[in-house]
Image (cartoon, rainbow, N blue to C red):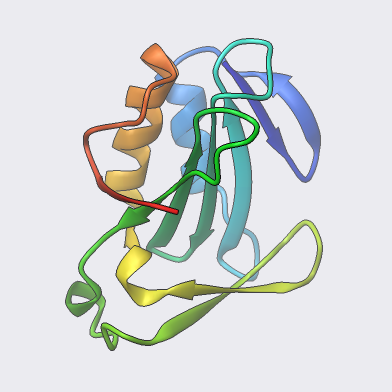
Amino acid sequence: MRVWDKNGSREAVGDSELEGYFSRKGDTRADEFWIFFGSEDFPSLAVLIWGELTVLHYYPERKHPGFISHGDPRVWNLAPVGVTVFPMVATGERQEVPNWAIVSSLHALQAAKEFSLSGNLPRSVEWSEL
């Protein structure tokens, strides 16, 4: 498994190191990174974190638009049809995320661990195909 973040790309070895990516948040309480299964760029899992809120994008292959995580915005007291703006640490930009796509960091970590074992779409969270 390879992980890419604002510091570059590196091999990740095991659950504890993967857990570290989910727990390290700077002053903005935000982070983003990509997880690649194997040495190729696909399949991949993109992770965007802001506090306890997380959104996942799974890309099975290069020309596929991917899948986005599907959560329950009521858990976070968010409007089901609204958006939440996540800060992007690497670029300084902001990313609008549909509230229904937000899952907990705990669920996202479980999905990342599942992805790291097979490279398949993790079944531990619900998904919407794009």
